[in-house]
Image 1: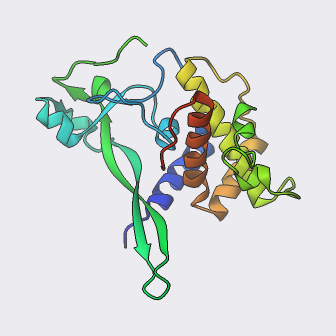
Image 2 (image 1 turned 90 degrees about the vertical axis):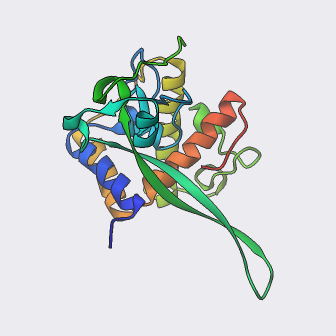
Length: 221
């Protein structure tokens, strides 16, 4: 049986941590955030953190536009995660419940990994506050008695750090509060190895917090 999306993404994050890189604390450069080449829409959630700034396209998009993937780059694809939402109705109670399943597809950076395509890029502790009961009501903020070391506390910290990174990327400024110490990296490796759903769930909540701060319509991740 193949690996789940949770396993694939968590393993990629752990690989970066083992290499001394904290994905959600990477300094963003002047190239801004990663976007889809065809639509120029910014990638969201975990994708905003695992992809380097650039323009990405699926194999189908590349071929339809008359481009091609460099032979040596075929195996060096990047993963884009999306959520498939389903509504299931209980046959006995007729109660409807909403479930989300993470799926993924592969993309390539068109400026570095492809030929025949031109760039379409156009010139172009708030996160914690969004968790209040009157806003997005995240357990890490709205639940009383949550202490350092609790799983809920850890998740809220990860949500806040990812949200801060997303805001830095959108604003085009560097995240200067970077802490890549060995102890910091080890603490997150330990958390992720215990719960392979943590990073995807936290990234989805961080995206909601970012949307809230920017006044944008919140969509389900």
